Image (cartoon, rainbow, N blue to C red):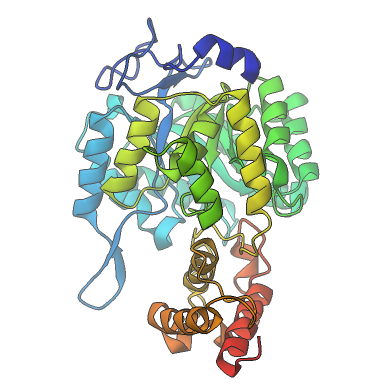
Length: 449
């Protein structure tokens, strides 16, 4: 079914695939439409899984400092968030051994194991970016069972394939025998569905889909970056327009899970002029809700992942998907205009995944990019000396930069060693962007902008 036909059928109410109220068994198939205030579910046709349209991405668990000053996950806060999510019908939790410097799976396992295993789906990944040997990769796979406190994975992903094309893929998963190993694990019931998360060029995506078409590998599902900016305005190098990815997967009836619906948080904190237009249309709804409605309006989407760090965004997202309204064609056209406006801002395409960390030279890469992007979206970005309130904006940026980023971790201390570049799923030229921000800061200090 195409999106336009789907929207006509579903109208402004909940989707026909979203059948049962929150709290019902996620293994039961839909028999009726969801009513007001109930989580929407999508059915995986291959398994009958009823998956919540809102999925919990575990890459941004809340953090605290331990006695030694190290960043650790706030397990109490995670438990509270997971409890609230499950109580309101969320049943899909996506994590990875690579998230939060290896802490994410354990925190997810502790929180989820307090609930019946049949009440949620676990998605995790083979994130063998560093050591691609068979031994190390299988150890990572086996460690995930222990960390997640489970004896099977519902959805298992080959993590972030695309960079380096087929050659890199074959080195990571084929030549070392891992694909055959994982197929065997699926036959044994240790894995229920095998898929991949994609970052890369259109050519690379076509190659991976060709593996499916020729029968070399059957992809049960695929995880793509999709949001109303990247739908038609991805750069084509670091990522591909999501309308193309969606169409190719939809054509093959491959279920889709969505990452980066908020474009690393930037669609929850859009520039002031764009936020004003969004709020004029839906004054009682959050800016972020537009992005989540966009992703949910496409019927091949199985779940939309959100990396929620506190109860507030969780509750906002629950409100969106428990009172879900697919976007109309006119609203989709409106969001396309907002996407075009978004592209006019000089933002760094960072999603705050922190794969680049820790920097061997101590640079706070995601912190620098987040501070810079926030200043642009909040309208506190000094652009020229002729700008209104330039002096005030100049001082505000310099003061807030020093407060947000310790001096020795600021952009001007980057030596361009390049250690971070290969880890970035967005393929951001990180040293170049840090240098650009360092030059911008220096021009503010010298008042030569």
